[in-house]
Length: 303
Image (cartoon, rainbow, N blue to C red):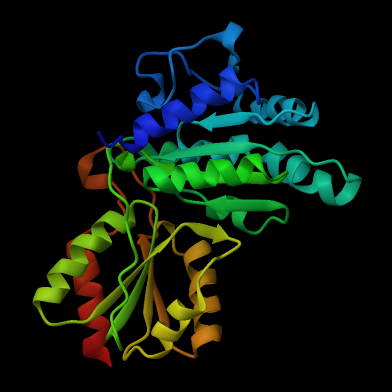
């Protein structure tokens, strides 16, 4: 029986603790729900460390653990909390290897969700880490992807920022790239937008609009094959980067990189430039399939 992403993460965490590779740190880890069901029912004696509600200090505790030649996992339940949790990670852990030749490897689980949770906690904020040296950023949405990222971390001594999304936890399926010969447009999708991009692909296909769909797993360093760049070069209208972070960050940077490599115009679509509230009419949600379809058709029309 195929396992969903939630179960996969839970098993990885259990093995990490049982093999004493490192402790798991975070707030309210053992509370009702066990962080969306992604944690095993283990406690402090097993290495599950409940940190204080002083968000700014907690990153320092994890950095200290990493300097003790362990590989801690740091669970940030809402990606918006990175604004408080990341200072010690980006200013010490990410720089320690370069400055002092002392690696400080941390597996940071940044968990996104949105919808009715207000102006601070919601959405993805992986762009916060993007500009800093010494970090690797990934966004796994499938069981095999998550396993591959974790195994890469075990062999590495870098800080990994793992941009998760609660909406992906029930997923059991892999998300392969779809390369169409001489497409009209190439979509590059990050995080939860990958699922809506798949829906948009099917809608556009029925409308005879030829789309290649690329799932971005490795964000920093950006890993895109020469074959995909060649496909973008052959496109009629260029590319589109989708993100569930604000576009003034990773998505524009990736779009620029793709533009320089392909000499094609690459557009961006992500969160609207507004602050989310707590009501449904005040949400700021990642682009859905209908919005993606409209944006693609607008690109084609304007050309």
